[in-house]
Each structure stands twice: as C-alpha cells, then as structure tokens.
Image (cartoon, rainbow, N blue to C red; front, side, top):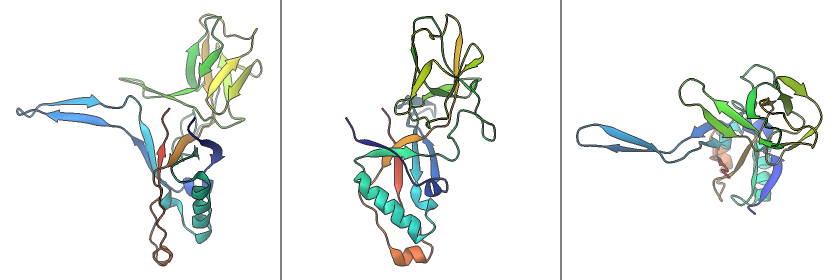
Length: 211
C-alpha cells in the first residue's frame, strides 16, 4: 500500500498558499479551424504551492521538518484547502442536508461521502475520502440521525449498523468538513535563506493523490 500519514500539513502555511483544481483536456484543431476536445481525466486534481504561505523562518523550518518526515514525495498527508474544505457553500454552516450521497434501498449499508459541483448542465461529483473527524453529520429522509452509523475518516465511507439501514427511497445526505489527500511533488526543497530574507518565496509544490 502506498504510504500515507493521517497528519495535517501546517495549517497556518496551507491557508495562505496558492492553488486549485487542474484538469487534462486534449484539443485537436483541424485544418478548417474546427476543434475537437476530449477530457483525458474523469476527475480533477488539485495542485498547490505551499511556498506562498511561508512568511517566517519558523514556518519554513516547520515545513522542512514535515517534508523530511514524509520522505519527500514518498508519503501522502492531509491538506486543508482554504477555498474548498466543507460540504456547505462558503460562509454557511455545515448541515446534514448539504450533499446527497445516495438513496436507501433497505439493503445497502455503506455510502461514500461525495461533493457535487454545479447543477444546471453537467454536475461533477467528487469523492470525499478524508473527512475531518467529528464534523460529519448524516440525515436520512430529511431528518438528521445521530446514532446507528459510523464514519471512516481515512476513506470517507459511512456505514450504517444493522437495524439502521436507510429504508427504500429515503434520501441519504451528509454535511462535513474535509481535507485533501496530497503529497509533495518534489524530492528537493531549494532553500536560499538570503533570498528568503529579501522576500523571495521558495517553491514547494503539492499535488492531490487520486485513488
């Protein structure tokens, strides 16, 4: 199994970093000027540069120590995306009705946490595999349930106990906060302290891990 540490990258650095989703699209342009576009990836992938979040030497030393413990690109870890880390819209509290994760049939016990982007044309559903412990709220048929289920914070799977399975036709919804599973996208951190003191920002690329 690929190494992964269930540990959060230094939060003060992550929340000041830059980055966002990336997709891979192949575009073929014909002699007529027409073009054909094909999605090479079914899912987007987040990329970040942690260097933008480093403002002090203490923060830089903390990131170097974190990098060393992860052995560079070898081991994954959790990352908090300031823009996108909850099931609810920015500025709104998490609600158990935020995201649909399935429909009960009286037999299915396990549901994957997901987040859906868009609604009108081609909504994109993203699997959420690293929910934050203690933040997941679940509703069945529009009513919140507070027992009879468990959440695996390492996979994002919600499992209902026997006797608590969602009945046929009941909407299963969830609200939560979540982290992004990532790894460093370099095995070399080039640190120039003289340049750093003058305001230079070291490049520390981080990329999402897709299962």
